[in-house]
Amino acid sequence: MKKPLKLIVIGGVAAGTKSASKARRDDPDMEITIVTEEPYISYAGCGLAYYIGNVVDKREKLFARSPEAFKTKQNITVLTRHFADRINTYDRTVQVTDLSKGSKLTLHYDRVLIATGAKAIIPPIGGINLEGVFPLHTVTDADNIKSYLSGHTVRKACIIGGGYIGIEMAENFKALGIHATVFEKAGTIMPLLFDPDISTVCSDHIREKGVELLTGVTVENIVGDPDGKVRAVSAGGKEYDCELVIIAAGVKPNVKLARDARITIGPTGAIKVDKRMETSVRGIFAAGDCVEMTHLVSGKPCWFPLGSTANKQGRVAGANIAGGNKNYPGVLGTSIVKVFDLAVSRTGLNEREAKDNGYNTLSVTVKTPTRAGYYPGGKEVTLKLTADKGSKKLLGAQVVGTDTVDKIIDTVAAALMGNLSITDLTNIDISYSPPYSTAMGTIIVAAGVLEEKLT
Image: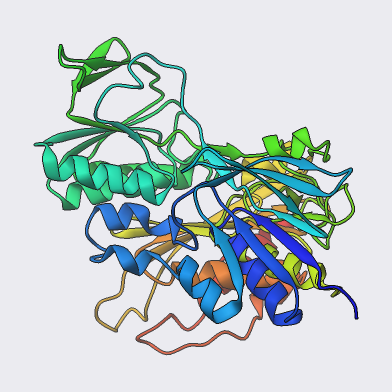
């Protein structure tokens, strides 16, 4: 009788639990163990800011499945508070430390899935260890922030970083009645994701909502009081009073375990995998925020730490671990974020990225109503399309507005996946009814303008 395969999954948030579940469905006999240093698994990291702001009213809503449920419903063993120290590819073992007891374990494997994710970047500034200074990356981080807010009077908070987490936290602090000051060292917020003209729309809106937003400013120091609690943030030669600081300076792929096992790390700094999600070492797969992928427009390696991407990669990895032959083609970097009353989204390459990849770009930006002009309640949405002048190829899109943003960006993403031409977009058969759109539609209008300019 053939012995069942042994799978060790290292990491238990999105990609790890998704791959374990898929492997179990495809191979009911496989012995599966998830190892995670965190006390929790299978949680919604993207919802942490909204949990802090009480938009998510119950903590348990953040969790998809408990370790006990994994065991009883799927026969998957989960080892929380266990740290994977080393993968020994010679004798096919994983060395693990039980963080609660300090004891060591040796787990034998036939397959390994590395889903170690990303880790928060902590800037090298003074005062980072003061009481009242927190990163926001895990459930434990969110719990610590919630606990601090309930036990201290916080009237003002400073946020270091103007990316997705920083902007979401500014909105949620505002909802809690806390004045927020956001520091972003780049000239615009979300600088790696959006072109300045799109970011500026969001910046103006954030300031209108009462957030103090400082761009092009570097934080020099976090200032404490005599009791070791945060008192202010020093930036640009000025002090900004606060009782709490959130570190939202970005994340980087957590690849130490893979690097120590001599698994190839790609040019982005994340783990290099093939389309089957297998690493340079046979039998070891990787998925999620620790992995680089292929950009479907440029064809080059890229890194997008997104929960949606992690889940899709985990599903492909789990299928192939169980003996399947699934491929993950790559990404467009499609993403969306709520900015108070606005939504801002992107897919493909923005104008800066396109130029960096050698394209001769042409961009058009159109602003259209979201509903028929005679129908009440309509708003405006702004769509920016970027193309290559030579090949007339669509490269990407960015959208900002109050509604229809997700519909527009998802349609463009589908067009990029399907390699539709700009002419195709001018004739795309999308839905129309006065309460939902204009007769032509924002995409058709923008594609028509872009086609005119290209020809």
